[in-house]
Image (cartoon, rainbow, N blue to C red; front, side, top):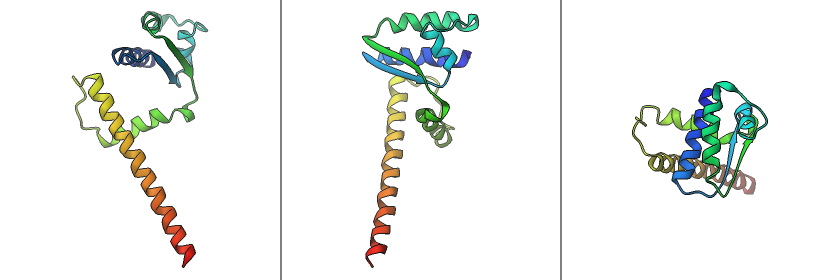
Length: 130
C-alpha cells in the first residue's frame, strides 16, 4: 500500500505542476482510493493520504476512482514501455520530460498498432477480392 500511496501523491503533484484543473485518477489500489475518498483509514499510509488530500484541494474538479486490474490499461502500457526503455536512467528526469517521453511512446505504439490492423484488414480485403 505504501508504494501505491506514494505513486498517487506523485501523480497528483505532476498534475498540479502541469496546471491541470480537471483530473480523474484511476488506480487498482482500492484501499488507497478508499482512504482518499474517506471510506477507509489505514494508519500506515495516513500521512501520505493527508498530503494527497491537501493537493486534491488545489484542483477545480478531481476524482480518485478504484478500478480493477483488468481495466488498468495505462499501467499495462507503462509496463510495456519499461520493457523497451528499461536501461534508460529516469533519475533527475523532470515530470514534463517523463510525460512527454511517455506520451510519444504511447502515441507511437498506438500508431503502430493501428497500422498493423489496417495492413492486416487490407490484406484480408485483397485476398477476398481475388
